[in-house]
Image 1 (cartoon, rainbow, N blue to C red):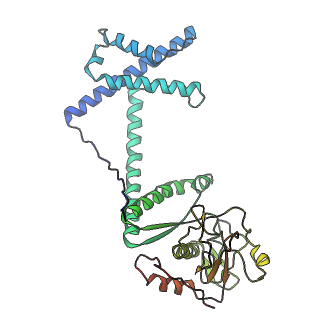
Image 2 (tube, rainbow, N blue to C red):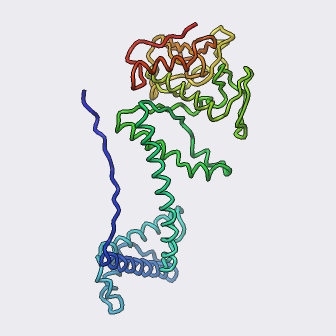
Image 3 (spheres, rainbow, N blue to C red):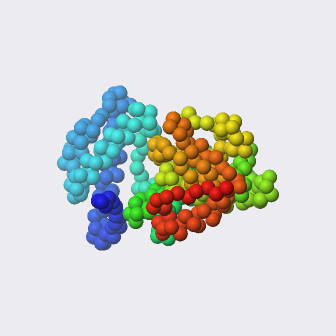
Amino acid sequence: MTTPRVKRAFKYRFYPTDAQAAELSRTFGCVRKVYNLALEARTDAWKSRRERVGYNATSAMLTAWKKTEELAFLNEVSSVPLQQVLRHLQTAFTNFFAGRARYPRFKAKKKSRCRRKVARIHARIADRRRDGLHKLTNRLVRDNQVVVIEDLTVENMLKNHALARAISDAAWSEFRSMLEYKARWYGREVIVVDRWFPSSKLCSACGTVAEAMPLNVRMWTCGCGTTHDRDVNAAKNILAAGLAVSACGAAVRPRVGLLPVGAVGTEAGNPTARAVGNPLTHEGEEVNRAFCRAVSPGPVGTTAEVAQQPGDGVVPRPRVEGRRVGEAAKRFGERGRDGRQQGGEIRAQR
């Protein structure tokens, strides 16, 4: 068995000496001067003659500027950053004429200094956030063989202006990325529960799915009498779904063309059965076409049959009278530190 190779990237910070810092400052000044000169030349050419001046023309201008007494100091720095800034200006004009950006603006030293000051503040905040994420993901991967998370549409959630700032500060996408690549490094498993799985509306005690659950509802009471904290209840449901995936070797993903939520009782001929989530697939592949008994990806607090006949979809059928998921999960976890069953099955108990 070959061990998969994992690529790693490293970041380094550059601490220049006083002489190097002076050289960098001089180079930045020359770059800013060339950029402004080229922008002025291109703007005048367009306004006066309706002529578009491209990169090649500004490069020839740079050669001529270096030969003048007034701009001879441009010869004191490397020509590479000077040529590169002309390419950047060409890209800026290309984006402008394509309607993707505004007209290029001149660079002022005072403005650049203010922008650098603001950028340093943002960089410091980003570094602290990243450091916190690294510590959290390191602890999760180090202390757990299997980590279960929920797939969220962060882009759509950012459209909610009341939550956008808090969601951005939490950096959920970066958190997931760190968790996944560190899991690959250390041989851990990250299971992603589908975003349509009703983790918040699903009662972790009896398996009942609430009709609606607006975001302002943080505590709710099920018909069975159990009072739930919204986030704690969702976490329990997500964990149970992950245990089902770990048992069956599938991912909790939706499939097109299966029975809609709420239709299982009628189709299955069992009025007590209900669909509590999306069927199971593994990265678009179906679960093994066999009868699989596992911890339900549906109601926490129950076990369920996840049956699939040839040509049929996987339909979770919870049985509330079954053994508690917590007990099954505990027994399941004791069979191996990696949290995965190495054979056999967890059978639903009547």
